[in-house]
Amino acid sequence: MKLPPITKTYGSRGVLDLPALELEDGVIHAVIGANGSGKSTLARILAGVLVPDGGAVPRTGRVGYMPQRSYPFRMSVLRNLRLTGAGRDRAMAQLEAFGLAGLARQNAKGLSGGEAARLALARLLMEEYSLLILDEPTAAMDVAATLLAEELLLQYQARTGCTVILVTHSLTQARRLAGQVLFLRDGHLAERGEAGELLRHPRCAETRAFLDFYAL
Amino acid sequence: MALASSVIALAAGVPLGVLLGSYSGRSKRALVVINRTLMGLPPVVVGLVCYMLFSGVGPLRHLRLLYTVTGMVIAQVILLIPLITGSLEAHVSTVAPDIRETALGLGLSRTRILLLLLNESQYQLVSAYLLGLGRAFAEVGAVSMVGGAIAYKTNVMTTAIMNYTNMGAFTTALALGIILLAISLVLNAGVALLHWRLER
Ligand SMILES: Nc1ncnc2c1ncn2[C@@H]1O[C@H](COP(=O)(O)OP(=O)(O)O)[C@@H](O)[C@H]1O
Ligand SMILES: [Mg+2]
Image: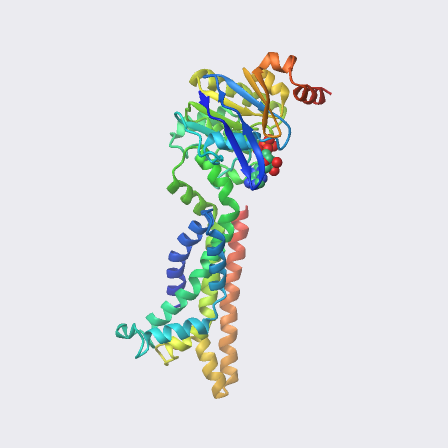
């Protein structure tokens, strides 16, 4: 999947300036970088909810997107999962898999941060997409929930063969899940490459500094 | 009559409020400012405009609305719509960006997004309605000018209080005032109870 060059400026301030990129079909691409490096901006542009300077990026196939602040709608957890039209049994099975079955009848507004994040992922993964964009899906989850979510994401990806953009703060998560890594710095693509290689032997000094910092 | 005005104003004000709240175009700020200005419309000004439209020389004179309940309801609806629109707009504006982004990410349609916004505004809906109803009960300027306070026809509590006061019947006026206050208390207690139940 080919992406055109993408730039985004707010007023006179450029927050994203990327060259044309190619995403590998059926591969999980981790997007890493410091706060404010433009990860969410990139995710929102690819999802089609934010228009970059040069006009919207053409979408190929169905795109699923989980924003950094995914919203638990004011209705039962079960009904949240059925918003896209799924039947009751399939929704219950999904809640079961995500460890949320006990909360099915509860109003989603009352969920904790980690539960709401699990709900958001479970709700999104009810449908099949050709491109799946997740913006820090596990940031609010505890270790057990994170590992469960990662496992379910891998299963989903294997089943559907979709291409994934995974914005994450966690280098260990990138290492566990991703085939490709894109490293952003101040809105620029500092480095990209095969995950194992890039995370072990970064070529770029900025990536190295970032990795060293998190390795502490 | 206050019931009719508030229901009609709700039916018009809620869609306007949701649309305005979810709208993020250039002219949004201007529209919000205009609506806030209309929220502060003095009832007598609305009364005056309606009076001029409906009166013997006004453009709408053939509708024969002056000194009728229908005319009073129209004046109150004009007064209440901005109030209800503004109350919903304020809430929808705060939740709309996150809801819109989440719903678009799930591939939901624009209509579904508006319905979701409405669903998130249940509490604001009720409190906006009661706000409108309270205003409809309490205001005197518009109804007295358009209705004329004709006994057994267009006389309402507030205009009656004015009449009794002018006649020097302070006890009766005060009694009516206390009844109005009691109505307001019941309405507000209702809102508080509802809020408490929705919060749980
Ligand atoms: N609506 C906006 N207006 C102005 N600046 C914004 C807006 N949204 C994001 N930014 C800026 O763009 C930069 C990148 O933000 P973001 O993509 O959210 O970073 P990240 O997700 O990598 O932490 C930040 O410096 C942020 O302040
Ligand atoms: Mg972000």
